[in-house]
Length: 342
Length: 287
Image (tube, each protein chain N blue to C red):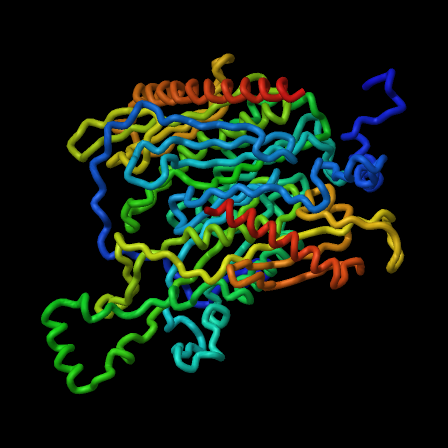
């Protein structure tokens, strides 16, 4: 290419040839006046600003598009009905003593899947089975959906049609029966079916930090989801939906995931030594160079911050002190997402 | 056997919601001659080339103003794996995949026959446009993700789906892939564009007429449809997909339909050219 400047490399070439020294050179500030910055120009603790757009799809019951930097994710939520007669080992939920029963988990009512094979990055091409990363992401999202108890299961239950909506003659009969047995309404309201939520996440563009973006998309899509009001019709023995009325799901809380990667100055660090940097919201280049990643899931209601989950993979750098620092970063990220949703 | 690499959901069968009464659809408005196309390149920065396409939805009753949404990424040209036999020209691989939430019926993650069909048609349409012998021993992957198909949300669910919407989807795939290939900088003889024409009748008594860019939801009955991939400056057709029955095996009518779809191709091509001009301008401004 260039003959005159053959001894110096352009920064793009440098980053391709030897990414680790390139990122290190960027982070190690040459003089004390300029703060150390990452290759993408962000400060180590600085995350990318999220942009969220909801209900842009017409065939899904709820949908969201989340973009953070160059990572773009689409999530579509679709409800389908599952009859309780089709559930093996079905037990009727009892709200008074239903502590042991977890319907969403036991009957598999939430089906999240994350698809990376859309050509969103050069190493994710279709035509092959889901990669390890895609499988891990799906499982992590699945377990977080259940462990955070985000969804209120009562909104997914489908009952028999209430007496008030039955025809006049039937109502008359029922009124007479009610005189005989006072609390017949409780047995009347047996759960006949459940909504199963198929939560499909598609990556349009992938530039690091897939979990945070995918989780934010799922959260925004679930907030946007409006299921049609459904009831069990005993005459036709099927679940029918009313075309007009749509009910939103009831969500408890607003958990937000924040991922940070640990970049060590030495490529193969020995235990307990060496310089390191905490990079919040890593991009694709940084993810490839960091062994240790931490994900914190927090919810910050007015009462105070709640930590819903911490996971730490690989490496030994992050200890309790750093974890506290990361929780602070997670709180500011929570505010970013909260603002982006509203 | 169940797919162990994905989360499959409950063992019992789930059914999509059934509505007690289908809401009355207001009478379809007079359709504009062509729906507006939105096209943007560079949606996936890490790919060699990418593009995104949306079609305007003239049916204002639905909450969204757009119907068809496609995202396309191009990866390559790159070296073939060592195990591959020698090839004197570029090897084109096309994948077309529906998102699970793209249509009224949920699509699975494994490719079904209609998706393979679309992939083969797309490959033939593009192969005629790419100058393949400039890249011996290399391959390029073209991936189109259908984020939303061209179906009416409020149509009755029991209505038999004859797959007419596939025609519109294919023409969109051809147009978006052409923009993404140009964005990737792969040499082409021309920018290929797709267009659809159909023979429809509003009701049973009416005489069938040919319409350009038919909205599947609106037309009462589609007799035949034809999707053409066309190179406007060279005046060449790279792919024709014709489906349906013509009354009385009229070859003139067939010719007319192809000509009408060429009109759709030309206007789609104008959108591609304009989109690419904007991309070039943006690149020049940033550097």
